[in-house]
Every structure is written in structure tokens, then in C-alpha cells.
Length: 161
Image (cartoon, rainbow, N blue to C red; front, side):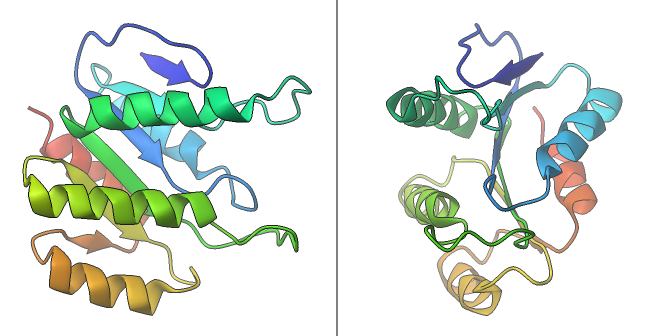
């Protein structure tokens, strides 16, 4: 089942949340959704990539939706963080600013509670990758950092309970 912001659906199986850049990034979420749909159709998927051309965009609803499903996924199949490289630059916003904050938040939660399921991948060309890799290797050495989205998705499937 696919859950797209801002809809709330009851999760019946294992849930994975697709965390990563949206604004300025390729639509990498579609690849992940198709991958999981073919390889693990029983997996529920939450994606924050909605229709951003909608004039009724509600920032608070977006953030609340993401927080709700991030927490749920952390106790289920997990949170997939894909740090996709920037495709389009927007001068009024730091690239992947929300993703960077959420990644740090969930890394800290993982160090406190190692039962949080985190899966991380960094696309070559993502700015700040060297720093993030260094910090993750020290804080969470058990987490494998993937360089392809396909390998990252495959790891999630291998860890579905």
C-alpha cells in the first residue's frame, strides 16, 4: 500500500518511510516505490513527495504527516534515507535542509535506542557527503552506507521482519 502526503491510512503490514530531498532533487521516490512494489509487494510505503504544484499546500500538515509516519516506520520496516544529489538549485533554500535535520534526529534516536531501523544511502555528488559519512561511521558504525538506491532498497527488503 502506498501512503502519500497528506493522506492518513491505517498501516496493515510493515512500513518503510522514504526520507530524503524532494525540492531540487530527481524524483528518486518513484524508483523506490516501483522497486518495493515489484520485489516486496506486502510492504507499505510512506512518501512525503506529494503534488507540490497544489496551491493548497499546508506546511504544518506536511511536517505533522512526516513526523507521524517517520515514528511509525522507525518501529516497523524502517526509515530509508536516500541523500540524492542536487539536480536544480534554489537560491532561497539550502539543499536538503529538512533531510539533513531529520537524518541527524534519527541517528541520535538510533544511538539511544538501537531498535530504530535506519537505512542510509548517499548518491555520489551529494554535497556534504564526506562529513556525513565520517560522522555516521563514528556514531553508527553498524549502518552500511550505500552508494546506489537499488542497493539501499535491497537492504530494506532483506531486513523486513
